[in-house]
Length: 306
Image (cartoon, rainbow, N blue to C red; front, side):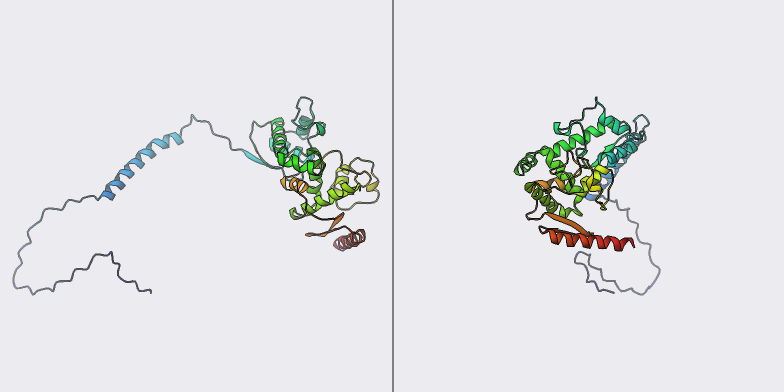
């Protein structure tokens, strides 16, 4: 047990008086008038606050229990992750609003909707359904929700910083969004995005085909790392194995990190990259080194399927 020294603020103890022997009958002690209890200043303040609290509770309880005020609906959150394609966003919107499947797609492409897209988009909202968490209420309409997504993308992509970054690389803002959608799909993790963006810029500057699996997957409506020779012979404008330059539209809806990577790519001379294993993406400017990395990737894939 810890010894505690007497508190300097404790009242001093009165010494006990020794008891005397009783010599005869005691006389009753004279009665004293009862002492009046006096409240200290702090006590009076506590009493006053208690009274005020009682009045406040008495007044507020009827207000909380009143039946005349309508209940306020709490919004639900609709999450649109980075990289989702428009088809995935449409499905999520229909589900969140409790609408038949295909309603959001029909709304987005209806002539009367006229989403605030750039002219280069040609009415296609791919790339401009900005990834974020959106509040959804019972009264939310698919057109209003899609329009809000596009408005959000317009604000994010329409800054002077993005415009200046696009011009620095000889691109329009819309082309920058296209490149960002490729970076979003190709990068194994956010730390690799700036390097992937540098590969895109380097290949465009040299007039090389991008040869990105992500664009081919978009054309074929799938998501896989297994690309065959027959796949690369596709006549789709999204086949960047055969066609040089950027695809005609974004291939998904990129987030802020992917866009920042395109306007501020990492420094490097890389022309090739491959993710050999999760968290291990190899970047190189040497084709033979790249072939060796691809062979290692294929070996890892074969071992995983056995």
